[in-house]
Length: 136
Ligand code: C2G
Image (tube, rainbow, N blue to C red; front, side, top):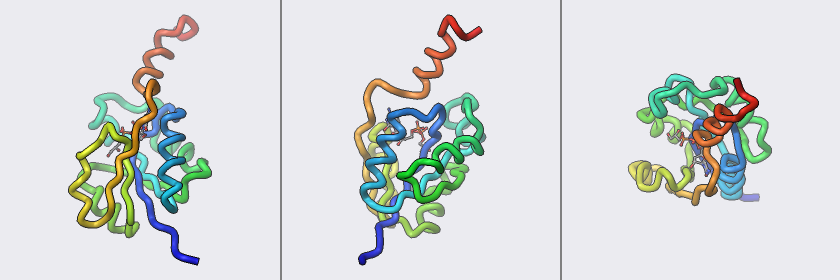
């Protein structure tokens, strides 16, 4: 039996939703999927707000997905190369909201951008929860 390809993806995965599930599902078709979950501090840097769920909760949530072989904490953009090399990644997968932004890693692995799931995102979910008449 031939060895499975090593696939790596990165993300915040806050308020885990169907867009996240589909991204992980499609990435896992390519091989064994390892997911870098953004730390709370890194999320604050990227989004200028703290995530709703803490890094340990998000690691646990993503780690329960049957599409995921392992999870680790992603602490900065600068360490992506190190993470990819440590895992001996064959393919890095990201949603196409990041298209072109990680092409620099194509010297060590294949970089693939998958179409995002339309009409769902954490920011809108958070806003609709906050604006719900049930939330006070
Ligand atoms: N995604 C998707 N469809 C959506 C929402 C998200 O396919 N409707 C994908 C994103 O493109 C990304 C992954 O799900 O590949 C995780 O999305 P986020 O949690 O928003 O992660 P992000 O903050 O983009 O972090 O260094 C890169 C970052 O860590 C990526």
